[in-house]
Image (cartoon, rainbow, N blue to C red; front, side, top):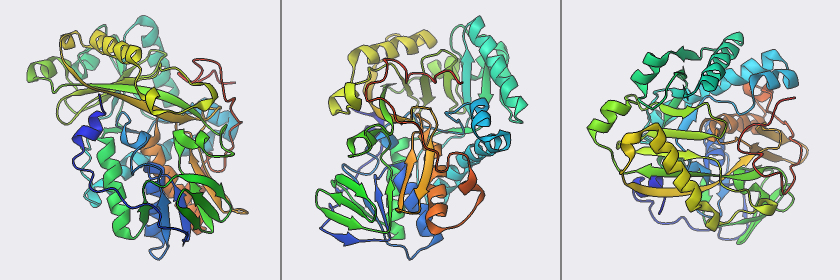
Length: 423
């Protein structure tokens, strides 16, 4: 089976030509996913005269940007108490607020640029489906309130009114999330940056990133600034094998479901949903009334290996179907039309980063732990400010120039399914 998003995104158009040989630019970006595209977008807005070249091994939106769960959310992968211990309370709060604001920024750009990505800001529900999960939900709402953020605690009736899943004790609900069609967002953003004057070279694999240049399969891009925007594929780059761990997340999608199902299941505002279990799951009601549902649990591959054959694990896809059916028993017998997956990037300390080494001109962003739909936009704005030399509230956020410890090329099995205990 193939990705739901690739089958419903519309025509991709002709492949963009590869790099024609050695070229000069002001900024070279490696990776035409969200991070690279957002960085180019905001750089050109800051300075329309910049020459920006993006090299992409496959095609724009190929990686996690085009196949994720479609949550544009204000979630932070690093817990606020840990951020506070590392960077101070004010910095932790500023980071969280920036992520919250980013959700509306993505929606505003999509509207302004005419990007049809099925945007629906219905918020996100985190269901509690056991007594232990209900205790966790109450504690999470209290923690958010202690930092000044609203995470609404819903009782059983309120939660069921929004999402008619089984065994619901209650839920937390955050308004700061929109459901999107991720590949349409990526393709629309790629077309937008091209209209601005950025050149995207597809089918061009980066072989080496170094100060002042990117060496590729078809030549070298010479530029004072080089941006690494490769997320889960970062370990393929020489010298970056241990920067992030590529962890696989898999998804399934149902056929379009009838009105009778949705009358019971709810999600009328296309709220994204999960629950408080330890193993990550995530879902959304799509614009064409399917359920797109995913989760972790695929095996880690020795040496941070990334292969197309790892995108499908039948046992994991079956487990996802069983989990989805346990949430919504009326799906028993519904047809699954799509099953897919791929890697995302996780830093060893579960702390994303965006930064620029001014001495070398090397910049980077990533380690989003699956929250990259919004985080990549914040990263793009931050990198644009850093590269153009503007000091802004974004350039002092606690992820700027953060260096995570190098991960082992073969971490203990299962460590990346959930956040590690905070110190």
